[in-house]
Length: 258
Image 1 (cartoon, rainbow, N blue to C red):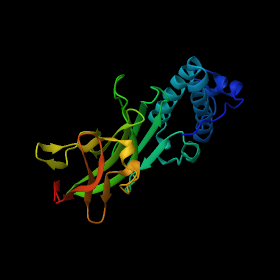
Image 2: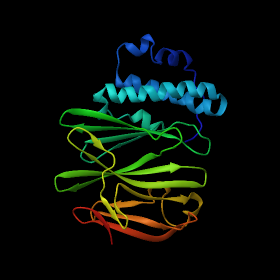
Image 3: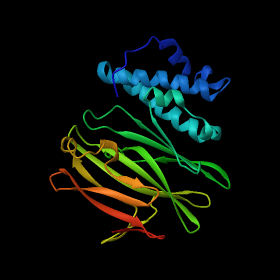
Image 4: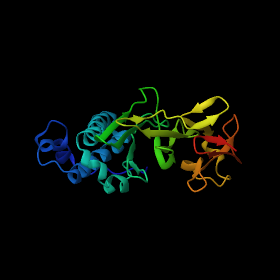
């Protein structure tokens, strides 16, 4: 994400922070989206210039993002075009319209990036929210792609996650989710491996070894929704990504190695 010069939003941001009168009056998603974008700009610039300022706005941003999704179910259908176009966060919506994932970089950790993720999902009882918690020591990752798989009476969601541990060291995982009667199952097991049924499949890799493989870095793991095949590159123990691949095909019940 490129550096953005600090705009003159001090007064507006002061009025927009939690607990101020502006935050309590005339709530609208369009207004909230605009103010959140402005706050995020201050986080980015503070990461370079003033860490105390960045921490202050980061807390405000994280709290307001979570509150917006939790307290305002109408956000489930809102496009958030400004947040996406301004590279503030990733917004993924499943093909069936029942699941949304919001991811953003917290701009902490230096070459290791720490991410936040919020899931919204539709149940018979309404729109629910799940805030993913990686813990203080786990940088987590952002979700770049979302696919849908139907099996019998259950729909599964394959979410492709990317983590940045350093400039060189990265991870990528394809994770499986499912919506039950009233909750999001974030440990759904759909991938059959030698060690049993798994919730996810992935690897750690050296970012600088993918240049000649023909892969794009945020989609080293690919999914073909027509043939229902997951394709992963073979990655050596030293992190080198190769042109060789491993494939898992959906058999109607599980993804199994071909």
